[in-house]
Image 1 (cartoon, rainbow over the protein chains, first blue to last red):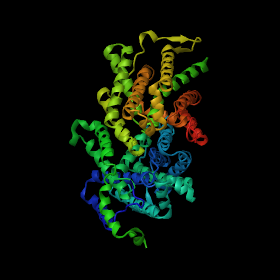
Image 2 (image 1 turned 30 degrees about the horizontal axis):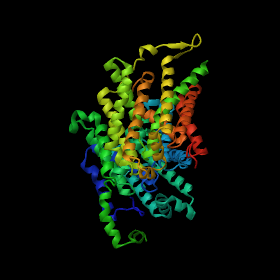
Image 3 (image 1 turned 90 degrees about the vertical axis):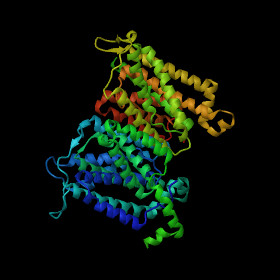
Length: 338
Length: 285
């Protein structure tokens, strides 16, 4: 299945991808810039889930909970007609998501395998019903965020998040930071321990690794990063409702991870790209006609076919080329780092 | 009197959950497949009951026909898709059955629209037993309780007293050895899956007059069933029974004490059980 050492793209390819992403807004209209930002946000979300599913072997089916909690956090703490401060609200929203992951992780990480899938789903659904049934977050109608948060450094505003173009670059910078952070984590001893847990938990335990601590740690990191994605999504769309932490959202995230090829950082990004584009195409009346209203039918069928026929996803296509390279230099990764 | 009524409701809801979760837990215990689409069969059963009752004008005809149709759909799905999942990772099982949910929900939306539809209670059972001047209890709920009890008893009898049940239990504890002793495993799997889905469809049909039929009804109850399976322990019929009744009670009590937060009560019970016995009450660690 997924390789022990995470397959990463060579720098040249990453650089090309980066240039393409940075130049993308020059080509499109506002609509495409917003679509691009949505893809980048979903990429952060998929990356955070892949950290659990692909790298640690923890199949969480409740990842939308942390995404949604951070989104709600922004909506609840934003002043009504003024811009909130990014420096204040972003860490707070991510902190809330991380704290929820800590508490929920404490319970769910006692289980493994299929129990884990069901229990993560159940806890996420508990949060869903809290927001859906009570007036805490506006009930099933949700809440609006009228003004996007403001990014200021000592009175100076480097990026105006109200502008779709500048918001796109804000999200792109954060995606690069998350990508770099995850690459760092996965190549550090902590990340190798996670791979060990995925491959053989019993052995890791008998060697003396505190498995529960490692799992809880990675669960909290993944929760915080999902929170980052949720915060950005709330910024972009300007409203939150219980659907953003419903299980369909968790399923979507899993789909992106599989579609892109799990256990590969670039896979999660490709998966988000492919999924959002597919959804746009399948739900566009201009392309599929009156069937657009029922896009979930086509999406459901696609999910079934892809999961049955291409379990390695799009990212798997790159593997052969990348493997060949690593045969030439068995320690290519570690040499590069020094 | 008020508490007696709540208790009756709790038992009725718990037994209904048992019909659903026993199928879910057996499918997982025997085939190792986590079937998210199980709730969809509950929905299919309910919508079939609604549609057939309108078509034939007879609810009593709608229940058996609907159940047979869900049995057929279950068998068809097993032979075309689910069969390919037995050796696959849980992740792919989750994803594929998640895809199936989307398909079922969208088909429901195309065929029946997104409105809530009521199903009329059949004529003979459409009255209530008065307890006091203000409190009474609908007979149909008692009927559902009785039907669920009979079905549960039948299920116990099949699993613990018949040859087929013996094979199911053998498959549940060790697939390979059961196969080497001459059990036709692919056939057994197909029947267990189809029977599990038929049970879910039957539960949906019987419950339709109480709950009415609405979009997403299958998903809502599926997650509660997951909680039941987690608490009861995977593969355990006894565990599913105890857990179903416990959840029925927790949900009803929650609704009485704090209606807005009633959904949380169920999950709190699960969290406590996870602390105490992560493998479920019926399974030893």
